[in-house]
Every structure is written in structure tokens, then in C-alpha cells.
Image 1 (cartoon, rainbow, N blue to C red):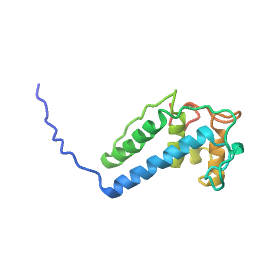
Image 2: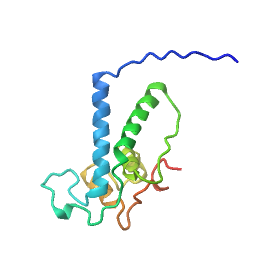
Image 3: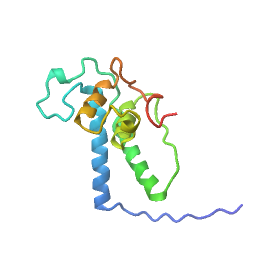
Length: 147
């Protein structure tokens, strides 16, 4: 059996690309934490009040930043190499990460046009997460892209 040697020449990411990746990651983290905790005031335009916070917090923050990190870097390599791949996550912890990323990339609003890409849509997205009549705290069949 003959094996092929693959050259691994590590290349660093440009400062511009790193800035974009970091900005996306921070936005995904904000969307995730907002879903878990915020009932209102999604852009924090006014000082945070108790009435802005959900009375019962359900969701898992601990795994979320890591999933957001994986998601943004997978998007980078998918674009760079034209990959056709699956990202398998959930259904357990980290539901707000996947929902946040799907919203950030615009797919959530395509599937659910009432959740718009503006402050009003963001408020609805945050309010519906793990809330009566809303969406599950886990990745579910209602999450675009899930199987």
C-alpha cells in the first residue's frame, strides 16, 4: 500500500481575517447569551433592569462559546476549501449557539420571516428561546439545518 505525503505548511491568518472571525465570534456569543437571559432590551440601549431579564433562565452557557468558536472556524474552512460537510451538534447543551449562528448568517430569518434581522427581530429571537410558546433550549427539528 502506498501512502501520500501531505505537506503541512502552516499559514497564519491575516489580521483582517482574524478581526472578522473575532467579530463574528463575539456577535454569536452575544446572541447566545441574549437568548438565555434577555426578555427585552436586546441591544442594551437602556440600563439593564430586572424586567429585561427572563424570570426563569434555561439554557447552557458553558459549552456555547466553544461551539461558536468551532462554527466560525468551520465556516472559514468551508469557504476557503469549498467543503461540503456536516457540523454535528446537540441536541443537548449549546442550543443557543446554533440558533444564534443560524440567525447571524440569516437562515433563521429566511425560515421564520417574523424573526427579522433588526432590533424587533432580535427581541423576538431572545424572548422565544426556552420560553412558553417559543423554541426549545436544545437544538431541535425547528432549528434550520438540523436533521
